[in-house]
Length: 225
Image (cartoon, rainbow, N blue to C red; front, side, top):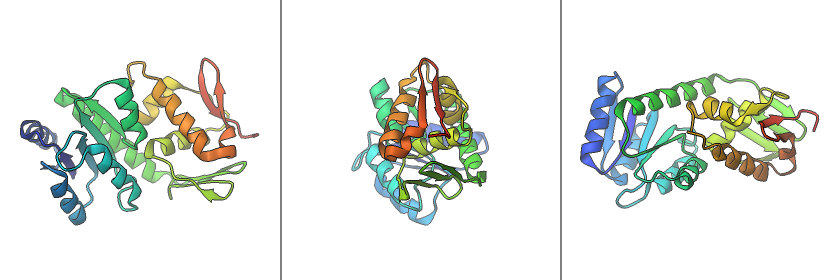
């Protein structure tokens, strides 16, 4: 099931129709109140969330989803008329799995939806745990500890960290991380990766020193730190 929170009825109905035509079940909501009531009844596989909404904006809804144990890992794709790099980074850094500016093509939306659903399924199958210095990561239980203390990360920060710690010593370019984590190229907006690495280091404190910058290339985990 996919939920669409969009107050524009023409967009909402077209998205529902397109998802249904591709064999995906979807339900739409014109305002946040109806969405929250539906969420009590059923947690969907993914949420398509507009930013500009009546009653409550999409970023506020996203933050609530990420702080609730029941929905903290629920995949969310933001739909919005705002398309600047700054707005994209804000949306992604708030925990969105993807960010699609309007107007968008329906088949592009379908491709993005499938990519996010694939990544969500792949993450659930991850069962390893990693200990690098004072950093501990358990992907399957969504646990990150630095110096023995629990660390709260956004979903994207968590996925970037898991990608790095699962391949210690391997250098990942920004383009590789964008493709692996977000599922497609961000038209050169590699600053998105840099923002997530910076916030990761801040949240991990001294344990974040194991994330090494390879100048002009990308990032890697130094298992000797």
